[in-house]
Length: 369
Image (tube, rainbow, N blue to C red):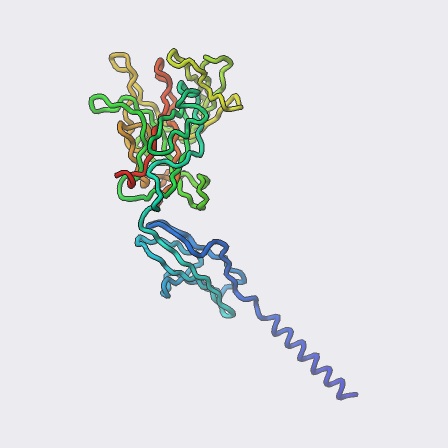
């Protein structure tokens, strides 16, 4: 009986010790990466890798290797190359109990895809403000499609805030100098522009790779952005008139009000007919107008400097390096995919109507020069 009791006691002691020993062993490190591991980049493009790691403790260390050599000792890695080629990356997580790793293959290309079109391939949005050219051939519901392709046509953005959003079928690289050109309808007399109607230019990368302009917009900071009277986050609300030839009344967030007057040269109604609402609110960066009346009684709108659409005779060449974030700080974008143009001036010139940005095409300079 005593022998049996001693044996049971030893078994119980052994079982308890074994259970306690297994309970002290932590779960092993586990790296999770839900996106593809074969990645394509263009020269100069930056990709941020941040693998998820579970079951870490205060002794866990992280490190990255490229072709077997340690290049970083962090969990996140910003990877960018100026040389074309295929690069092998490996991420490691390690502590005193376990170790895990994941590998990536990154291909950096040296040229644009063979099917890259030099001109706009898709228009995502056309929303003009009211104006004298709205509800005409250059300002109707489908006019935005005119910007597609080499033989593009002209469209009007109407009054302040009217916009168009378009994209290419490839990334435009941020090369040395200007990167793309926006065509307008600016005339020049005696070497000077006489009817500049500037549009703010916004640019966007396709960061999530879905081919849609749903990432972060960056504003091109043109030379007139330093002028006195520039208003950021300016907002204006237009009201549909009660009659066909009624003036378009507006109010803004600066306690201002006014109208876009109906003129004798354009007989149609100026409020976009395809909009269901009787009001239209638009916002953006407001530039002060540069319109004067010369001695012959003609309205003259002078050049606004570099960095705007419909501002320069022959087209406006834009450098991606002029981009700024929401706080006005410069940003370094290796390339962009989408472009937004928005009328930047709220001013009526009298009988010649409102200042209205016109766009007649956009092209990737690297593919036309």
